[in-house]
Length: 79
Image (tube, rainbow, N blue to C red; front, side, top):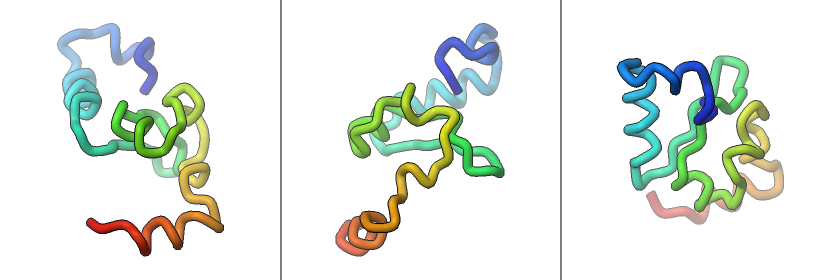
């Protein structure tokens, strides 16, 4: 969800409240639709991935999971 999205113009919107909460989380949050299209990326996700939100929004989530990197990344991460 872009910060200039129509949903961001209604300050009483439950969606605005939800995205404000996501933005302020210390954990990375990426919101995708049923097709895997990225609609929201919080600051923690930007810091983790190195991708700016403006470069991720509207793209498929696969951009974050390259074939050569995702197996190594997820196998070496401590949860």
